[in-house]
Length: 222
Image (cartoon, rainbow, N blue to C red):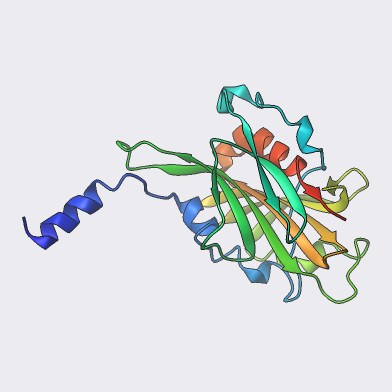
């Protein structure tokens, strides 16, 4: 067998092909780059902060049957959260300020259309000088290329116990994606934290309960 033939066989039977979403968000997308925020800002989206102990293994059993949750801990930034054990955690070779990404990937070695069904990313940005929770708002985020459905910042919107800004949007790129962004300013670290949930619009509502539980489990030391 020639070297060329062997290479063709390896390509043909490669078991996993990342989806467009996986390539864009974990391998790095053109729209989710540093330009989403001002040069000194790191921002994100998320839901109200519930303690991890409140998360159970039967969340949305129609999707995540018999799953359990694992703990993620980043001592450098004092951030903890829970994620489903059947989601893939990735901490290496990430881009656009992402320090960890969690993906639910449909994997079937006989199906060459494997896709990332949903993804939740944790991103950290340096905050601008003299930033405060009161001053931080959507005006500091570059939403070019995004169609904003809604955004709000009120007393009931928090992330890890800190005041948060929540944005729901669509992004129309190579594929249409629906996103939930939750951002908060972390004063003791002088950073802005973003939790980003992304899915194809047809899957967004399906995996939203799990994404909300993950984002709601965030604990920030402050």
